[in-house]
Amino acid sequence: MENGYVILGIIALLFLSMYGYAYFSVAIVKIKQKREAKRLLAKEELRRQESIEKQKLVDAKVQKFNERKEEIHRELVLLEKMKKKQRVS
Image (tube, rainbow, N blue to C red; front, side, top):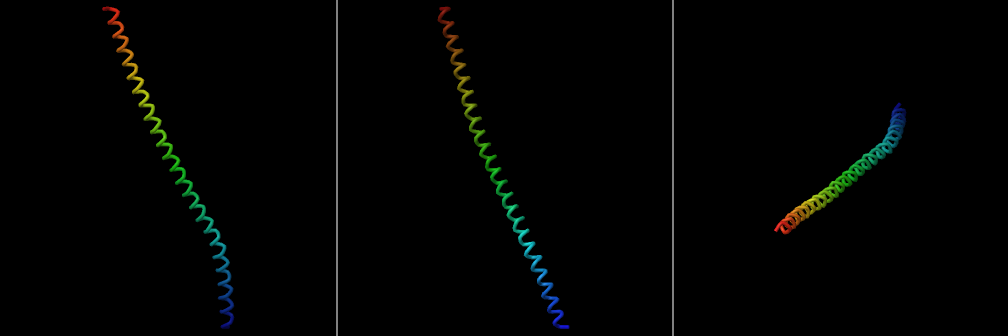
């Protein structure tokens, strides 16, 4: 009878180890998938941040260009007024 319990214990241990081995491989795959998803999210976030920085640079250049354009326009209007004054005089 005592040998029967030992054999039953060994068989139970065998099935538990087979289940553990099968679950271990599935768990490893899930961990790798989660790690890959985190890496992709981090990469996408970095790409988004770089895009925002590039857009800020473009916006700053456009603003500077527009300010310069307005300054040139004011200068041209001033020169036109001076030209009209000289004609009148």
